[in-house]
Length: 425
Image (cartoon, rainbow, N blue to C red; front, side, top):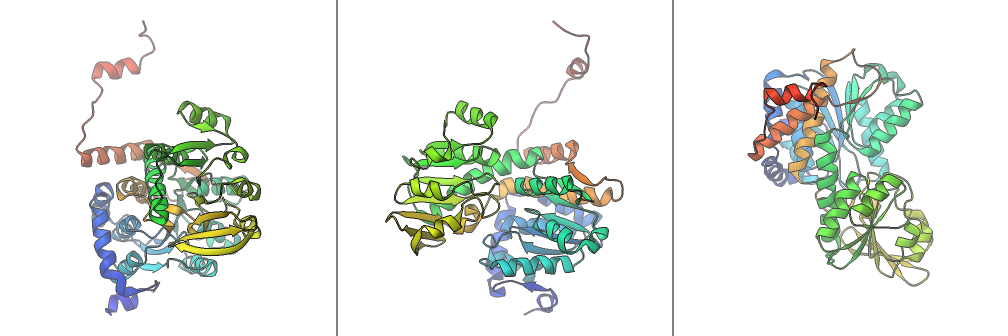
């Protein structure tokens, strides 16, 4: 074991997995050209030199490239898992052994270990927090108020996390700037839609090996994640039902060609259920009671609260592991309900998460949002801030360039026309 590894503080499952992790990290990098260019610039300019930083993310091959870029920028960084089942142990090992980055993450860690890692991260006294679900920020505010004064700001890349930050701001406890990475166009249009859509179905297929064609799949929620999931499920030949609480999104789903029903009615029709709402107990006891024998249930929202697993447990007489990350609940009524990934993010619990091509743009936003916070230290008001439009467009430009795609530019005449109110019919 090298001196670097011994000096790098960590809590990972097995450092001997590092060679495999390094190989996979390098493979993911092939489709992350935007973040690579940012990393190269960071290495030259060191915009985060000496900044204590905590990143709470899914520890995957794609996240590895964000961590490497932050280190190249000069940050003193600690990486922890944002979900107990989303860590790729070989990647965590490689980040410690090959890149000298402190990582506290193990796939399958219990809640106590997860929260211990959050507190270890806060012991680092971060000036910047990169959060995924706002657990680190919430813990900071609730348990370490004396450290808030050190904080330059935070970035957040999930819908769930933004909802929590908005609640913090309403309650007057968000007293520092937070960058809303989630709503950047180069994030949610691609990561939430194409990334979640593909990786969710990938997780279901890996966990169960069921044929999706001909199945009835119920997608709970028609935000960008729900749109992507419903679209990809239809593309695989499934009959898709959407459930919604928002009348505008429900109309959109109907006009996109999907059947829209309340969950109480959809429960009797579905073969596979996917929750992507960010809310609590979207599937409840009465829905389990109405489901078919053998119905498969999973969640692709951030936290494991969308499916009321306690209600299911109360209806269950026997639980049996039937495949990796797949459990069959035999109910008192005699029928069975299959749960994938303990109700946690199915695309990370049972698969590898989003493809690196979309995470390239998401993590480019994270890296540049972090740089923006440091550059504007002291000038940003407390509250939630959008990614600057010019940053969003630059990420899109770099991505198009890497894809070999050229687009048009406005002519001087066109620029004059769109900026004038005197021209008409």
